[in-house]
Length: 512
Image (cartoon, rainbow, N blue to C red):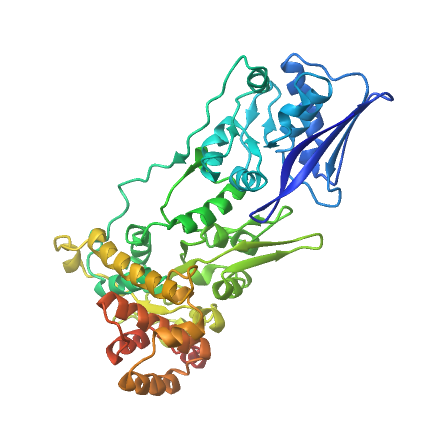
């Protein structure tokens, strides 16, 4: 007799069905797990054996074979412990075999029989719901699984004994409730920033349209302080965006307590991060920082100090909104529609822009150019707003806090985002929620400038040597500025401000 238990294997954010087949037959006393499993799957034999012993059951002195089908699909992770254990329990008659027919099962077993949390419960729950199955998962992951659907039957036991008692009818488990993560009300406020009015304006534009932003200024000017206050003015995630973000964080095991939040992700990796840490990778092709920042912000402080190869690996995801991690054995695709915000010093010492400062090694302009050319031109071309953040004078720091804070800016940003969502929904692009994510052909139609604006763009394109990408990014930026102003058409004043944020990258190369 062969007992079958349904579970899943993960490919990116997708959960593929896996059939756990358990057979107990006469022969040599051996416990074998086959089906292209990794080290964690092979070690499940000892965890299952110890968990069953702690629960008052002993493995029979027979030949136990567990097959994870399909056999050519790689199986990774410890979430196969629970389906293997339940399959063995059904095979020896500890539970009724038909009790597991309509359930997808995943969970890791502790040696005392407790069921511990695993990653990927949310995509597994969605896959189970699509198959018409219920879900059996660890107790700590129950609030996460409950988000997959109100009609989904979710069992979240603490231990094997509790699950067996539920099947026998001696103990009834309540359906877990969806978990909501409490959002801290003490987010850093823009009212804390004194001076830097032009940088605040650029931050508002970037938030309103989802544009990439680069702050360039001396140490202590407030670049990191401004970036840290970006989450306080960003609109909350839409339900569709919340689902996409939660799937990625579930796969990565970052959903604390299975609770979800509509606050946009804000990731700030250290400049020593490797390329695999940024874009994803490793033996199991885990999502990287750019995927964990999906529909949110990736903040890179000290931008030139990152590895050049790691920075250049961001170029393709910035355009496509996804990252494909290709390995010899498999290929995994993760979403990566993120907003890049970066900060850097003008040179290594950071004081080349100070009045009266003279570098003792070489002219200031050349020192700045050599430091800034660590960043490739194609990456700079993908950044919409290049903003200089000068040092703040002591007289500005002694002034009272500004009257306008994050709440007032967030209201304008939210109104602009509503305009953009309505515009692209009317065009049939329901998945486009910001100007930065709009395709080039669409933005030409949505941001068609008037005659004076068109003449301005033509003249500026020659002077700034705008690429085709740069031209469309200027249009997107101008469309966002017009949305903040409540204007239906893009005028010359909007294009002029958008062009002021572009940088002539060839000037740096000539200076270097």
